[in-house]
Image 1 (tube, rainbow, N blue to C red):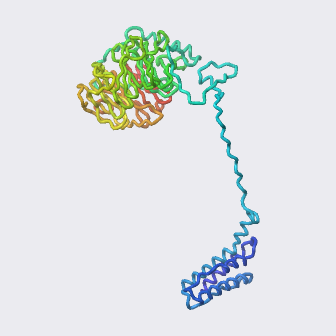
Image 2: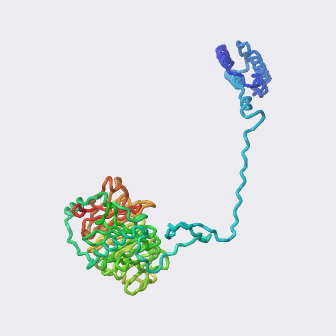
Length: 548
């Protein structure tokens, strides 16, 4: 007890050095004395001890000026040692907090008897009533594809309700989007027309040994001049001209743009690129006509197929759907006169370009959800493969009916959406599928049976996300048992696989290939590979002997 008193005296000596801020210390002790004390053991001696403790605290407060007081406690026999120590701690804490004068300090900071500044209530904004009249809104001439003038922009009345974009109707002139590039586009179109003269059918190459094919891929390189921005938006489709004299690449993108790039022409470090806009929605598929390479056919999600004829300098309508739901097409005939068109809702249409009608000759419902694409068998052209939600199937055109058609073969299993399914280009003995379940599968279609066996399964990251085009594994026309596909691996690369699942080669370059090339295409006879990314840029790997 004596030692405790000595510690308390030292603490009080240190507290005396603190500056006094307001009310005297006795106020805190007075408040302490008014606090009710818990009676000990419920008898009178306990209450007597509480009163004596309060009196002792008051006496100590009055004798603070001397600095040598001692705390005296009632040594009642009825209190245990724990109760005595507890009461002593309570008294010490109360005296310590009373000496700090915290209440007075708070009043000095906030003002005597005042409170903090009141928050002003901001008035609520009144809702503007809709008068039902049309609003006058300024629209950009550049976005409207109008000529810029020195006069003020016209004020166009637009409806307050949502507007739908009207798709283009009728033939469209094959003119450049930017008038500044008109001369360059004209030269490009002349080149395109010149290399398309004569027969454009490609002779089938003899199959190479895998070792020889792998060596030829290693000779293919990329350089600065083989990288160019061809479309203003994300690349969704690619096609390469079959000419062996000059290399011409066509790219289709979102918002209906088509870009043509002449790889063999480069004047004053300016690439020969022409851009057109024949559609108003994403272009999902591009093909040069197998009979006339001066024509390029494109299908868009706006429900239309157009044929760009460079000789006539026009984009003609080939097929127009009632809804905006066309997804892909392929040639049913070798001369490209008959097309098979797929729709997202599971319908297919047969279009004969020779009839002059753009509505289609036959329509059928396959009962598929999210019909992404169709691929026609290269030899038995009445068979075609489909890629849809969680399934890849083969149908026979001879069995198509208006109400519903049944598949003649199934390629299982696919647990998620199938992005693509392509027959091998020469014999059609294999089908390669790319699925969102991170798998690439190869099926043996040498015999069309109800259950097509899967001969190879390759684990491949196909999760491209929202802002990249979906991966599509496509065959190399020069080697029909090998295919190319984009890759999410870092450093960025383009993969080449064999139909057995063996990786044959990786196209990559630390400086000139730094993005994901989701869409890829191989030249039918030359060692040229073109890959497109999500910014409209194309990357070309070419044999060293061809780059000169």
